[in-house]
Image 1 (cartoon, rainbow, N blue to C red):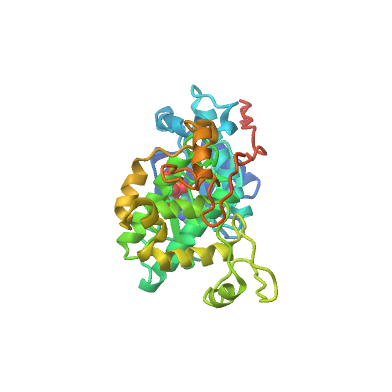
Image 2 (cartoon, rainbow, N blue to C red; image 1 turned 90 degrees about the vertical axis):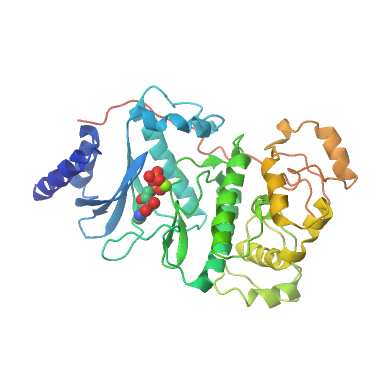
Length: 392
Ligand code: ADP
Ligand code: MG
């Protein structure tokens, strides 16, 4: 009862801050009743679509509550994420804001689970009830939230490793989670315990969403621009895009691996390096392998053989400008003339095909033509939403 009284105070205060409607308060009170949370404290962030609060469990562990606003106007401009997203084909009602917001909250929960399942650094989602998402709190023991990447004070020599970490995360997100963040920037990455934590994934789309490549290109543009401003020598947008999307990275021979692995301080998965073994096989997201390739590409940056071969010059920014304008086709269904393009690839003439690498059509080292689309993950097909009021 005292917890409820306390809760009621806090809820009242939050309500006067124009955040919590009565129904949301009921949801929070029920969480208190179930012993999930004990008190809700200050607002960590007020945003256009959601507010984030700090909360404590009965055992004084820190939690973050992301509470989506239920006003109808807020979610109007989200249509671009929804159309073409198979998880939204059913159950998304644009006329019922509560229902809509609930879909977004549930989607963020599921996406966070995917990130965590792939070993990515992200808040651990604990529970979602209508418009309230409960997750682990990224912050210190006193309850201060960790800074956004934008605001973080980062030791100078840690910035370049964080750029690597970011690109590897986006690659894992793409290949293992099969997601494109779609709002990735220094605003939606927290700097916590010396690492980057990806947050705010409610609008993330499946990697086969019709606009997935446009979203990804924009995500990577933000990443490249942020780290370039911080003095990191980056890959350049085009190669960053290739690094993230290319399913098969070039193989490495054991000697190269032996030399390079030693330089990786923190392998995220164990590697067995034995010169008597055959070369390490390319894999979609083997992170050590990907790290080695990324480092090689970064080292090669200035004398980029790919850039000079394809564009007649190695000017990365000009190359990026061309790339930004180019329309990237997401699937072979959308390729203008697949047979002509396949013939061009077979001739080794893939200059005009900006999508070729990304589709796995032209692994740069071994020419291989594949016309199969990336298989979709359908396990979360249903965004089942029924309007059963949960108030007693
Ligand atoms: P919005 O849709 O408002 O951008 P975000 O998910 O980006 O929502 O969260 C807004 C802000 O709240 C973040 O920039 C961050 O400062 C803070 N925040 C979000 N999640 C957490 C968390 N799990 N732990 C600590 N702070 C968080
Ligand atoms: Mg955000």
